Amino acid sequence: MKYVLAEDFPSVVFFLKHLLVERIGVDPKDIESVGNSDDLLSLVGKEEYRNAFLLLDLSMPGRYRRLVLVKELFRRNTSLKIVVYTAYNSAHLAKDLLQQGVAAYVTKGSAPDVLITATRAGLSGEKFTDPSLNLSAAALANWYDLTPSEMEVTIAICKQLSNQTIAKLHGVGPKTVSAHKRNAMLKLAISRETHLTAYLYEQGLDYLLDE
Image 1 (cartoon, one colour):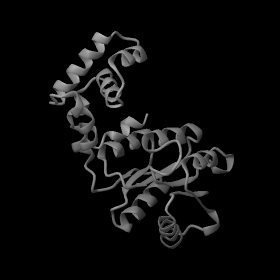
Image 2 (cartoon, helix red, strand yellow; image 1 turned 60 degrees about the horizontal axis):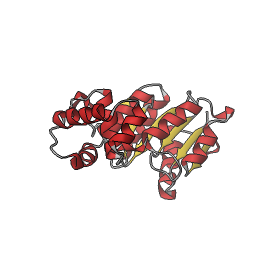
Image 3 (tube, one colour; image 1 turned 90 degrees about the vertical axis):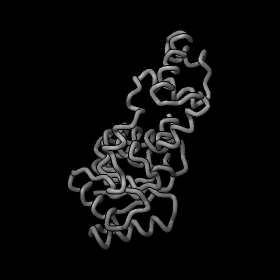
Image 4 (cartoon, helix red, strand yellow; image 1 turned 120 degrees about the vertical axis):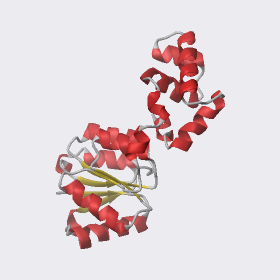
């Protein structure tokens, strides 16, 4: 099996390699490191990386990051075993990535033993979530009271697109866009449109702006 460390900080790469070799028993010859999401995507598309194990930082240099990066990785290689190791302490992001198919999600503020447990889970085909993240509470957030259309309009507004542009992109009229925006703001208990972006960041949903 190939092991890939997707991380752009050399000190973290050193730590991860040491962990794989000393605590998991991986042969150093089977470990490869890459510090750019574009290079990573090229690498995992190769035949010899089928069923590879990937320790993934979500914010390396390159075109893709976070949820968009994971979607693109699985598009190129559906057999990857991915353990996310990230500074993003977002239960919403963890929930979405686990639904996409990642094996585990660990924050960089957690103890090494948490990452070791996650790595072993990923290698054995099990799921693992950092215990510091409350996925159950995240699932109850009022964001999920929105309809898919209301979510799409809210995200588009936070990307500073006009109502006319949003309407054209989604094939609806400007009045429909305004209605979705109004309903979303009521459900989120937000009185001003300018506060929508702050809401996404405060809730740890800002990764939705990447797409």
